[in-house]
Each structure stands twice: as structure tokens, then as C-alpha cells.
Length: 120
Image (cartoon, rainbow, N blue to C red; front, top):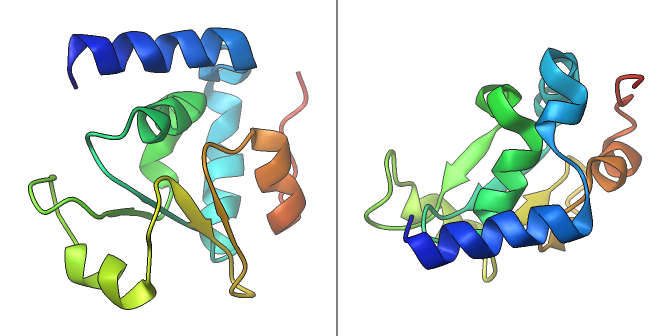
């Protein structure tokens, strides 16, 4: 990620609140629940909003169902993104077929999936 993209992502996190540090390893169960509920996170390695979304999860990001849509990204799955009609990043798709685009708060993801956020 470029220095400018990193600074933008950091600024957005600071101004919109939320950080994996506030939750720590407690987010592991929440991220697993998102995955198990059928939620899929489509993004790209170069997208600052995607970086900010991943930062919200910290190490728990590894439990998410993530699809890399950029051709040059690690484990790129560009054909999957094209077949799914993904046009903006990040995009979250839920089991019922609904989608939301843009960085989502943990609270909003919990509402869409009925997953419980950990207690502070």
C-alpha cells in the first residue's frame, strides 16, 4: 500500500472510530460468525477503504471469507468478482443476496448477519 493510501486509511479509522485494538482477540468469534453466516467481503489490495475495513478486524481478518478482486492481488479471484457483478470496493454480500458497499462498521455487519459483537 502506498504511503498516501496508508495515511488516508489511518485518518479514516481515526475519524470514524473503531479499531481491532479495542476488541482484541475477542473479534475472532465475531469474524468466524460472519464467515459461517455466509457473509463475503470483496475487495482489492489497493483500495484504502478495504484496508480500513480489514484494520477493523485486526488479526481476526484471517477468519473472514475474503475475495481479492484485483488481477495482481495475492490469491486474485477476479473472475469470481466479475461473475458476482462486484462494481465497488469494499462490498459485503450476505447469505440472503443483499449487498452493502463501502466500509461497514462492526455494528452494521452484526445487524446484517445477526452475529453478536463481543462485549467491551
